[in-house]
Length: 226
Ligand code: SAH
Image (cartoon, rainbow, N blue to C red):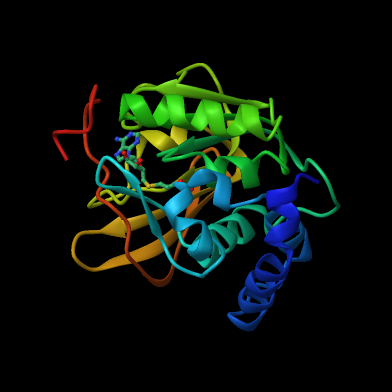
């Protein structure tokens, strides 16, 4: 472990304790989160707060998600699977941000495709994940409403930005028995899980209140349209 990782060991342990207290139960998720150094995803000026359970700015009017919400969404995404390690072949993430959630997802899937609409953040994610030597994530600059590979099917989709209503097109990208985990709403949002049980059978479930940035259409070279 490098020296900065070592320095943050105690606060990293405290973060895991906080997640346990907040009700995260899946040890596979806690284990993955404990292995991803969160401070490297934010500016050095924020390192002292990197292991608090809060979102932090990453520039371009966007934030790195709160550790609890990353843990919760991952837990919901994998809850119907058993066993350790990579329980999925392909996952899709919408809204890479700085790549923190992507890094956590990389523990659970052979491959992760991640789409981000703000170009400089795509570069940031690539650099962050290269730094961590995580190589099973493909970051793509695009609009998560439409710029996915239409012929590909996923074992799960995690969306980190909130549309007013969930895009039904995303359901077509799911394999059977796969889930879409997505915040839905405007000023009031709920975490939603949509399970594609069979080809024409979906089950929707609503979970807790959340607060995500809106899912915006189109892509942006500089984030100035946010
Ligand atoms: N989980 C991320 C933070 C996500 S913040 C992390 O760990 O860092 C939400 C991200 O969704 C922002 O970067 C925002 O630019 C992006 N976003 C919003 N609408 C989008 C869309 N239509 N397609 C792709 N990304 C989108």
